[in-house]
Length: 99
Length: 167
Image (cartoon, rainbow over all chains, first blue to last red; front, top):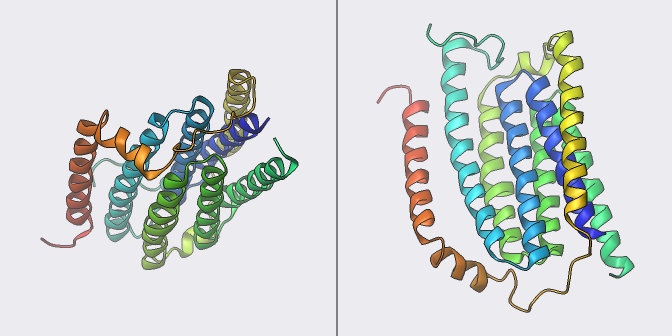
């Protein structure tokens, strides 16, 4: 029963993250929803690691966390640079590769 | 499985789902960020009840600590009045987006639901400890570990380069 609860929760969390990425227009909100999806994936890793009693799954979660930290740093730096140029973080306004 | 563990799982599930809904639908980015921090901590709770103590600690320190502070910092640094007012996305997007996500979510639930048939077996005594994770990390995963440290340095340099006005 417990593994199913955890797996279902992570599936729903991932779907919620997808909804957020598709619906929200602010770049920072989209970044936060991406974090939500990464965490849903991590939760599945941990659940299966517990189910099969393997430490390997936990190491993958460690790597995903590092990756998320790098992603957040670079993503937020890009948002900052964009805001300085365009005074907005609305992704519909930022639709040119070069300006 | 005792009723107490089941209750812990259910409470954590409710907390995680409610905070995730707030993250996705709240207009104020600061409230959404705080809800995300709450969500990350409840996921750390999941890690704890699934005997991944080391990862639960990392989750609180790295995610709820460092990454969330970074996000909150940038939100407060920028003047996000327009985002607060919130221009809505197009009608097509508002209808199709949730529909596609719902399909995806149902697909995941269906596949994942069938993948396990039994509850969790009692863990081995050293499962999830720093020692066992560390042995994997510096044994089997030594080269990926070094590679990811390089990636972190690259991300740090890139972030400074992008955010700095003039070098």
